[in-house]
Amino acid sequence: MKNRLHLIVLVLFVLCFLYDLVVWGSVPALPNVGPGIADSARREAPLATTYITLGGVLDSAIPSLQAFGVARLSGAIGEGFERIRADPTVAMDLIFNTTWNASHRWIKTMYWAAPVLLLLTLILWVRRPKAVHMVRR
Image (cartoon, rainbow, N blue to C red):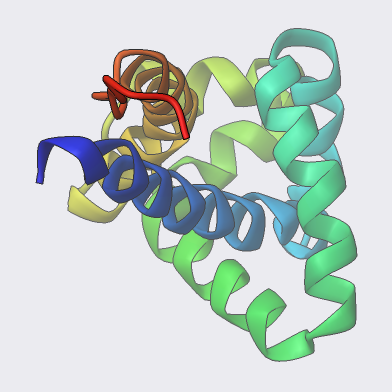
């Protein structure tokens, strides 16, 4: 188990990263607030911009993923849509400083989990047990 731990964390990273790509990639498709959130992310959140850019390609290739992402974001941050429409420049502040419901908390957790899991994967890969051979062949 110990020698495969880096693979387990890698699989968790990939799942988390794909979730982020699907959800954040659908930001431009949100009615009325999508472009404001994407513009705010470009100014303030490079990680969110990366998710939006890469996820946009994935979501445009598979429309059902975009529909899932839009539904997930609408349910999570729907309470903040009115404030985002009023002032789109504070969109990222509203998304990351306030927690409206459990779905919103999950999106924020997954947002930060991907880079943490990537770093943990690299650390575990470097520290993995290596095979030791006493006699050369």
